[in-house]
Image (cartoon, rainbow, N blue to C red; front, side):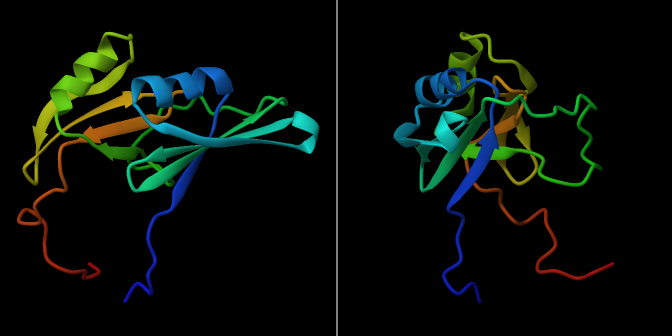
Length: 145
């Protein structure tokens, strides 16, 4: 029972708001819903519509800390944000034409999906996938082992 619970938005702190908005709006095609300045302009927020959910971008005048340790799947925490697209290869070609760095080239993956992974201008890992995976390679339900 979910009580109507669904994903509303994710928030991503970025170094350069203009660069980030250009990437998410112009390259990924998300609509800017609005922006807000807080704390006398030292904290900027921009909301973008991303399909049924939204992305909230944060930018601060004070630079935040960056962890340059390479990401590993075994590390705790969020791994990536995934977006459904009609044609993974076409979107990948368009992004590559703008020098977007890919970590995984378009590939057919378990569950009958085609996917690719790339980085936004701040190094956040993003995925494009053509559909929800088929559950046939997965075990049904949950059972702790």
